[in-house]
Length: 309
Image 1 (cartoon, one colour):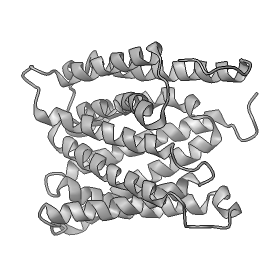
Image 2 (cartoon, rainbow, N blue to C red):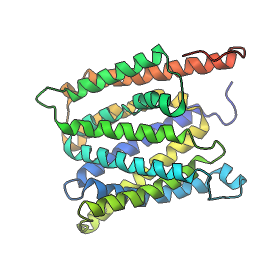
Image 3 (cartoon, one colour):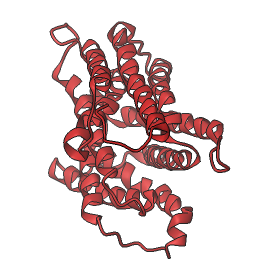
């Protein structure tokens, strides 16, 4: 039975809207990438995105109930996540400037596969044959999309893969944070660190370019707002229902990215994406399915020795 706070239908709608906003942010990044570097765009995105992050924190009931405390014990770990996110953004934004939009986005969905693999050394989780098989299926899809040895294969194809690894590492580290710390507070620490990290990276790579008119300022503001609001919607949707209920819809982002890339850039890399995109989504969905099975087993099974899953 669903609890009063479990509004799965609305949570799914909000998570899909978040995917759309993330892809709209990516469209703007690709549009601006011929005038500004990936590090510059990362700095702008994080700076503007601090506003939605602050709104998310202010709307957190847990934060208010705990006395609106801004200090946190694991602040170093939260800042480390911000640094890792900076590297992820740099790689992904650079990929958007060099690869077809849908191709970069699709390879980026390997983050769920990396999270499963990284949970073993970092969280000490035991991953059984079913989930390792799912990881293998997903990475087979990544290889199909990248097409090593093919005419379209370049080193740039590793950029979204590196971004996926860094995003996954950031996500796994988030699970090591104290459970009583509000997620928006963790996100605010990480976002603030990302602003500093991206700024330092931009300055070390040649500095910031002059903004080319009010139009670009508007695009940059929209980019930051889209990204920040997408994070806010994800936080809200996760509060409404279990993450396992939302995970299967995560892969609608591949379809959204393909449609938007075709609409705005005239890209339709069907031959590059198929059937690899299907394998990536299948691997991720297999992981979701297995984790839901494990969760049900833990709820219904009697207490006993921990078994390998």
